[in-house]
Length: 229
Ligand SMILES: Nc1nc2c(ncn2[C@@H]2O[C@H](COP(=O)(O)OP(=O)(O)OP(=O)(O)O)[C@@H](O)[C@H]2O)c(=O)[nH]1
Ligand SMILES: [Mg+2]
Image 1: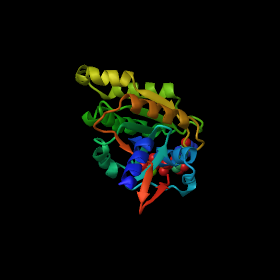
Image 2: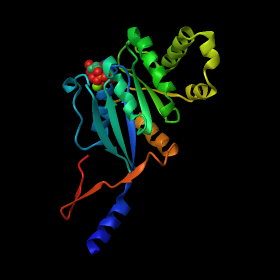
Image 3: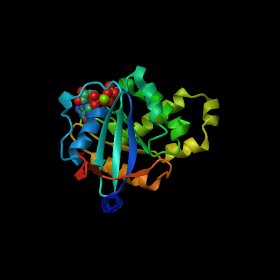
Image 4: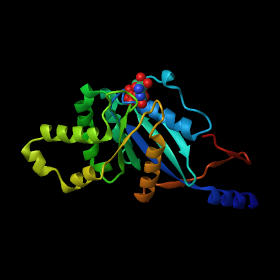
C-alpha cells in the first residue's frame, strides 16, 4: 500500500508531458543527421556521427528531455517508395518538421511537390509546421528568404488560375504563418533555435487528445531507476 502511494507520488511529481514530432522531407535532405545532432546537443549519450549514417529505410527515433516536457522525434525515411509511411504518423504527431536541402537546386521542385502535399494534409492542418532550410554551411545554399520565395514561385508557376482561386483561406493563413529557419545539421547551427521553436509551439498548440503525461521514472521490480535517454 505504502509502496503504491510513494510510487504514485513520485510519478505525480516527476511527470512530464510528452510530445511527438515527425521529421520529413526528401531523401538526402539531412533528416537523420539533424536527429543525431539534436541527440548530441541535448542528451548525455551523443548521437551518431554523420559518417555512420546511411539512408533511412523506415524510421529512427530520438528523445530529448526538456525541463518541463519530453520531445520524441520520429525521423521518417524520405525515399519516394517509402514516403507513404509518413501518413501513418499524422494522427499522433504534435508538430511536423519538413527538411529541405537548401543546396540542392535541382531537386527543389520535387521537394516543393512533396512539401505541398504535407502542407495540405487535412489531418495535420492544425499542427505546427516548421520548414528547415538545411545545409546552410554549404556555399550556394538558399537563404531562408530565398527558400520562401522559391516555394512561392514554384507554387505560382505550377498551379492554374483555378487552383489559385481554390487555395483556401486556411492554407493561405498557414503559408503566411509558416516559419522557415536555416540550420546546418552537420555543424549544429540553428538547431537549438529550432528545438526552442518546437517546444514553444507544441505547448501553445497543445491538443489535449494528443498529449499525455509520462514519467521519466521507471519502476522496475521494486527499484526506481531513471530511464536512459
Ligand atoms: N554539408 C552538409 N551536409 C549535410 C548536412 N546535413 C546532412 N548532410 C549530408 O547529407 C547527406 C544525407 O543526410 P541524411 O541525414 O542521411 O539524409 P536523410 O534526409 O535522413 O535521408 P533519407 O534517410 O534517405 O530520407 C549525408 O551525406 C549527410 O552527411 C548539413 O547540414 N551540411
Ligand atoms: Mg535518414
